[in-house]
Length: 177
Image 1 (cartoon, one colour):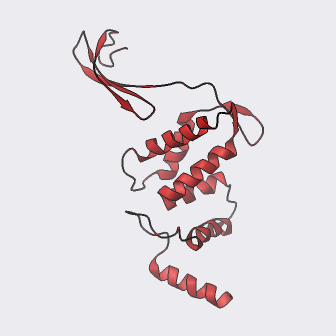
Image 2 (image 1 turned 180 degrees about the vertical axis):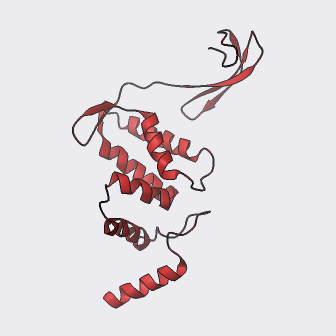
Image 3 (image 1 turned 30 degrees about the vertical axis):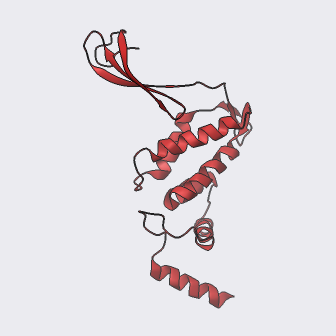
């Protein structure tokens, strides 16, 4: 293991702990004495994602992380929530035990998890994933969240619509029926 401070390759392990699907190790460089942390995770066999245009691409955790981070940007989520979400999705993917998985399966997993985690992040991700082409499709997705009761704000979040907007929306719908 190379020291991030001096570049020396000799270090000793001070502490090891299991974390999720890997091991966290505290190390100390034998040359400069600096301490640093490393994480070890089992490298599963190659997994390929079948894209919408039938191309095959190797599964890339960082690409998934990037997409979810964009959707969750500036949202009041506790530290580590996104990493835990990615870990859960990655574990689910590998539990399927397949060598190739359609990208839609992964997209559906992300959509489901984001809907439970943060409604705004869910709408952001869904707008790209489901390729909303106009405002009415976006409105339909928000209405579906509200109709299923998922529109109620999660702990620590602002509602999708104000109480006044929800009331007028309810009255408008009753008049249409």
